[in-house]
Every structure is written in C-alpha cells, then in structure tokens.
Figure 1 (tube, rainbow, N blue to C red):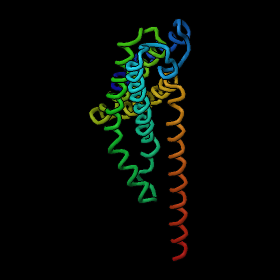
Figure 2: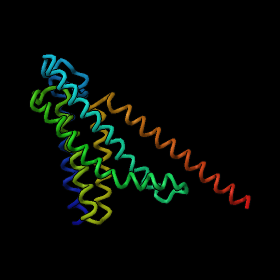
Figure 3: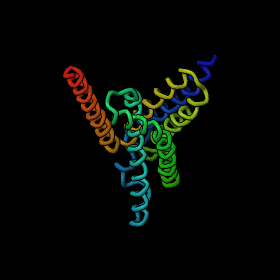
Figure 4: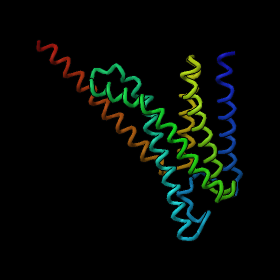
Length: 210
C-alpha cells in the first residue's frame, strides 16, 4: 500500500497530462505542438501588449533553463564521491541549490502560464500542452518536497520519472526554446566527464610514479 499511495497520484496526473497533449495535437482546432513564442499572432496585438508578451515568454524560457540546471542533479548526484575535488564540491553545491532553483521554476512557470490563461482561450496554440507541462512541473516539486518527509525508494523513483515526463511535455510546449538548454546540459555533462577521467588518470599516474 505504501508503494501505491505514492504511485497512484502520479499515474493519474500523467494520464491527465497525456490526454491534454493528445487532445491539443489531434482534436484542437489549432492542432500540433508548439508554444506561444512560435505563434505571435495570438493574444494581444498592440505594441505595449506585445512587449508584455515578450517578457512572459522570457520568464518561460528562464524556467526551462532552470529546469536544465536542476535536472543535471540526476547526473551529478553520482559525482558526490568523484576522484576530482572540484567536481565533488560542484556536485555538493548543485545538491544544495537544486531545490531552491526548482521552487523558482514553479514561480516563473506560474507567472508565464497565468499570463496566457488570462490573454488566450484554452483552445489557443500551446495552452493545453502548457497546462500539462506546468502540472508535471508542479508534481516534480511536490514529490521533491515529499522525498525528505516520506523516506522510501518509491518517492524518489516517482520524482525521477515525473521529471522525465515533464521534460517531454516541455519539449512539446516550448519546441526550439527547449533544445538549446538541453544541448547545453549535455555539453556540461560531457565536459565534467572528461575532466573527471583526466583527474583520475593523473592520480593513477602520480601513484605509479611514487
């Protein structure tokens, strides 16, 4: 029962969000994926209102960048025992800040989403898949909060898989705005991996030289 009490809410949210995305893609008049940044003709039209639109688009983009940083913890939690002192310190720092950044993401995503809910119809392009992405991000935050209070492996597993689902929803919603942060994250992972291997090989060489 402990397992299913953790899993059932996440399963319901995943199915609901998948239904929202599927409805927009297949049945909505606007059809197909894509966020607001790729559909400038919707919403407000005056110059001043368009500037507000740009600001709230940027809030969404910043939230995606923050999401890339927090998701990096998936990789760097394995580096807490790294042979490189710098990578070990960096991993500990990321652990300390990733929860704080996560809450910041929710604030930015709430502001971004609220703007479009007030200025566009639910059938507007990107609105439904945006709602799905927000609900998944909110679920990531809730399960992240519960990890320290419900200490079992199931909470961590659900947190991980809902995080992955939120990335898919963000890719569908944001399109190109998602790709650059994703590439940047992979590049950082690769750089740190090379740095760790170099540090390990140097330590081995120094040990053999003694």
